[in-house]
Image (cartoon, rainbow, N blue to C red):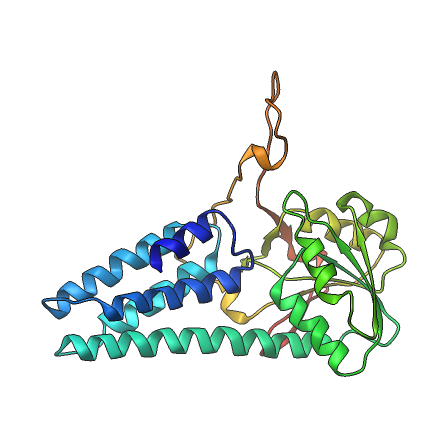
Length: 283
């Protein structure tokens, strides 16, 4: 399970950072079924596998912080037996997963209150927290229109469009990434998820920055929704992931380079709100 989860994270089969975090945390349960000679052996194996999971994607800040938290919860505890250490790991995993899922849902419910009946909303890609926000709005009876960018080269927006296409109360339009500016003047709000927030910079799916800059230019509010666990302090250095050039072009590139970064950096000065489970932060 751990090896398969690492492969999925490396190949970006698991897209949302919160989903990546939950998958990595639950993957550590594989260690509960293994045999160890001593508690120290168990701790070493936990630290080794957690380090492998963290290294699978150095762009996901919440993956880094939650894995560190799990390891610390286990290794810092006074446990006399391997069974006690395993119980501690199981509890730590459950605590992290519950906190991530509940905080994401609470943040989404808070952000949904910003969507008014008849609004036109634009979103980018397939953030699981944004999806939860839109679902909360629809469940409360709010009707709105939604523009979704394709989010090339993975076309994640197509997933969002398919998931919402048959819901009552929403009119969905899938647009190419370059059309965001064309439709922006018709929008009442732009809604993003985020990978993490470090200092005054939001790191999120590539394309977030130009969309946010366009929205700021035409004075359309930009709202980011995320759990507070994505606010990162010291100890984490964001490293962008650069994907295979074959995702952009299958033919050989002769005489030119191809760039395929996964994320871009958006300054908070371009945002209006960041919504978490605890608060609505205004900028």
